[in-house]
Image (spheres, each protein chain N blue to C red):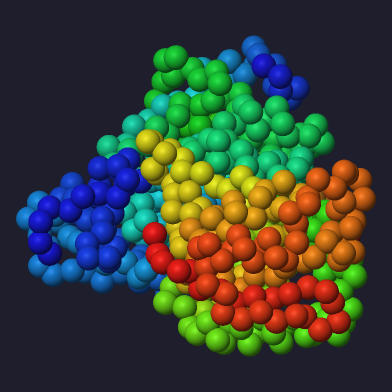
Length: 68
Length: 458
């Protein structure tokens, strides 16, 4: 694996935790790797959104506190 | 409709239906197994919405449907079929955005694209449009996007390579009919692309997962929100693809040429007149070696479907952006190396047609082209004449003599082995398959313009 972002071991663990689903209407091979990637990216984006929303709330509260 | 239809050679992958021709008209059969999905497409208003937005080709239902078919559709004919390896960066980018837009619209109506092949998109009236009406499946909450891998191979990989490595890598899509393998694209993508989080995710991480898929992964779902965030991330990636102009030999050909303004004016007027004399085409005009489409416009502005072919991706990009900005719906600029034209590819070499199989054009322009073929590629006039006779019925062609400074520039760095390169030999060769109907010198230059008609059709 050449990707400098993800080591073999971490990547294998991520893949192991991810998934395969099937769709009767599909006629192309969705590819296990492509499904896994979607799940991983969606998870990362979801976590990012949660963090962003938490950070915005915290910043609002802090701003209120210091402007009292 | 009489007889059982024979599917087109490219229409065998999807069991939902197939495309066939009958009496010169194109039809799409919907098989009974796709009845439910087809009805959902119509009843939810998705079809109407997509057609209204110019994202899906319109069709008429043929009644009654023949035995064995759920429906037969007659789609609006596309003026000219082109392929992703012939598109410039801007065209591929717009085709990708259109595909994402269609997927988003489908999701609103409880459906999803089941495939995302770039071959399903065609440029119709100047815009990218989905031509495969049977590309939709029912969406169920929790399902990942089945066409995600195909979208990345067909759009993300070539766009990243064209924009960040070299625009000529568009030709890779011709070698890989189901899109550029992600591991290959990942190896070819410059190192700096790893800093773009969207490219790192959809191309590099994805490539790793495609090469090392898990053997027994447990079932897991992707929420609707998760799917929408994937689409949003893909859109950000595509929108971040820069369209900046790259320096090239041909991109500024007209600015660099030694043509005087008077000679250029005179040539423009002459070409316009010769086009008028050729009369309206039944189907299409080809401008071979069109550069940025200065002369192609003379045909397209008459409302004639015109394909402007050129080798240089930068020139084609300029031609496309210019046509787009003036709202020209009849001009289709495409990349084509005439010395090595698009071949027939896919199963039995019949899935995607070669260049000449998509012709012949009613009228072809070959302006300032012959010296590049004859001197730049050592082609004898007879071979050029033969190719042109298979490419068109009527021909407007320019002869550039050896004393012209452009030819002299080409000969400056090589031995002149072109004793037969003269006007007399040129006419002799072209008069084989063509009849010369007009011969006009271009004022202010030593060049000559001809109007010719093919003697007999193949």
